[in-house]
Length: 249
Image 1 (cartoon, one colour):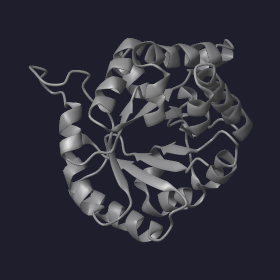
Image 2 (cartoon, rainbow, N blue to C red):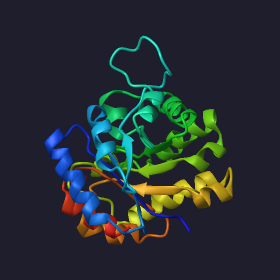
Image 3 (cartoon, rainbow, N blue to C red):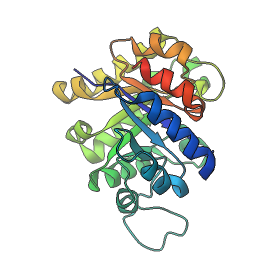
């Protein structure tokens, strides 16, 4: 049985005061509920604060990005070892905003995936298509390409220690979201793609939905057989809303 995971991606939002209040709300609202695993991914500069804020709670902390290189002259970058050192358990790699705004290609995302695993953390690998690609009926082609890039360098066994997040780019920050059936179709495709390599790993991996997840639609989305929780953007900045979403896991 796959334990659902709900991860909040705070993106470039927050302050020390706002984060402290948000974490307090989430910790209080989810205390005693062990049906779902919960993680929050603040901006780099607030990770250590948030790690202290969730101390003695089951809430995990993740990062939103990572450098593919282990150490060196890479001004402005943050290495996987540094993230582990300050208390991260998860790291998002390949988020659509990194792919499209910062031109991170499949090969770089695969290297970041490996960098995270080499430091004994869990990568949350994001895959998904744009609106144009969906309209061209290229969703499966795009998602397969993104998965295959990681499979080529890491192998299927690496996915036994990973999470995948399907994020239709056309549903991120737009207020739109895939219907539960649309999400299920792609999640099933992802699981099937991995099953071609190893059915056991494919059956065990958690595949999250990320695309305008809200309390109002989380229950229907998470109720799909291959949807194992959510990667939540804007709604994760509201403690009450995020707690409600976690309760649907």
